[in-house]
Image 1: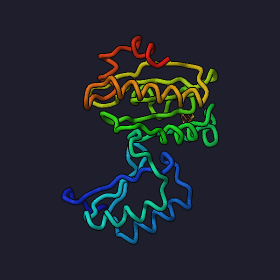
Image 2: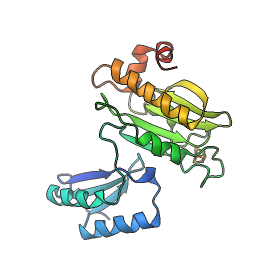
Image 3: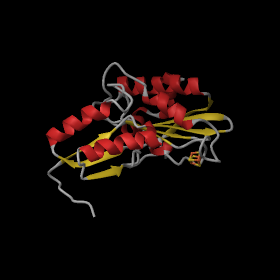
Image 4: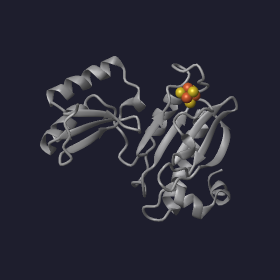
Length: 210
Ligand code: SF4
């Protein structure tokens, strides 16, 4: 049984390779978790690690120490990337979702996004990372990658629009940046991509990005 204390802080650890932990990563994390006596840890729905129930001063020190063990995330980048294990670890995998996810995670804009941008990458049509309900979703088929934009899995859920199919990795990266740029330029302040796409429309959006 874990202790609970809602007054204390929590922190989510990004830069952990979309939930894929090597034994070394786990060992380093465990050392830090034990050193700071973190009361509870949780794998979040976004495939990240949450450290729960710490005092703010302790949390600041812990974050500094963690920084040495996780990769840098761009300042004006996406909120998170979920990626499935892909063909190296899953028998259904067609394309390397982890590698593409890592590249998408490094997309950087000139200014912060107007709202959260969540990304899901799946290595086959089973879509385990739910790309149809992510702001930016990508899944693999034998034809190549399919790119989806404007999905949302929240309480006003929306299935995203298919923007293009049959893409290779480089084409996904170029198109993803274009989609995010148009969203950045045209969306209302604080508007998630789902609300933006409802207003803007997939036809007008495709005209801009393709
Ligand atoms: S999306 Fe496909 S490749 Fe990825 S974990 Fe699911 S079944 Fe495996």
